[in-house]
Length: 312
Image 1: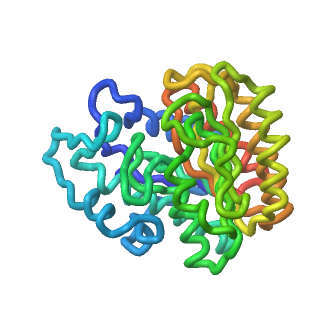
Image 2: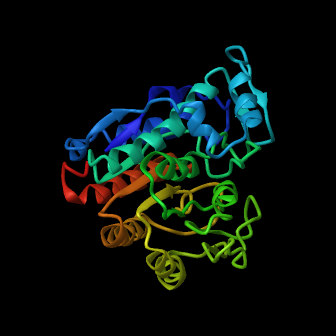
C-alpha cells in the first residue's frame, strides 16, 4: 500500500534547499509506472493532536502548528529547518500517513505499507524541530501502534545516512521498544555512537566511515542489527527509509547502490515474516539526489510488494 498526500508538496523550503518538493514529486512519478498498477493507494489523513502527543510535548506541537507565515514567507527554525505557509499541514499529513500505515497493516488491509511523505521526521526531538524534521513521523507510528493496537514490542530500524537522533531519544528509555540505525560517522547530527545502547540494550547503532560501500553495510547489518532485531522479536516492524546513503547523494559520502537497499528490504521482510505475521511499515526519510531517490524508492516498494496485490 502507498500512503501519501498532496499537502506534503506544500512545505516550501525555498530555493536551493535539498529537502525540496521535487523529491516527493519524483517518487510519486516513479510509483505511477505500470509496474505499480497493483499498488493500493490511500490518501494520508492528518495526524491528530493525540497522535503527536505520543512523542511531543504540547508546547512543541503548538510552536509548529501556530506558526502561520504568509505565502512566500519562511520562518527559520535552525540553519537547515524552515516553516512556510504549507508546512504545518505537510507535517500533519506526514505523521498521519505513518499512523495510517500502521492501521492498514494491523487491520489486515495490507501486509506492507509505504508512507511517501515530507518533511522527514527522524531528527525531530521531543521538544525540538531540527535537521529538516518537524515531527517524529516514524517514532509517532511506533507509539501509535502501542496506543491504538495494544502491541507491546515494536521495532524501528533506520537506514538513512544520518543518525535518527530524535527517534532514538523517543524510544530508547522503554525496554519494550527497539531502535537501530546504520549511518555515516562522522556526519550530522553527530550522535549514534556504537556505545549508545538504550535502557536495556534496545538500541543498536552501526556507524559507518565515509566511503563505506555495500560490503561494509551488509556486513554491519548482518553482524549486529539483524541478529539483535531477530532476538527482540517485534510484533510490528517499522522502517525509517532514507536513501541518502546512495553513492550519488550530495549530502554524505557512503557508496551504496540500489541493490544494497533491495538486499536489506528482503532481510527485513524475512524478520517481519518470522515475528510480525509479515506486517511491515516503511516511512520515507532522506534522499537528496532526485534520480537516486526515485529509483531506490521504486525498488524498495517493489520489494515490499512481493506478496502481490494483497500486500500492495
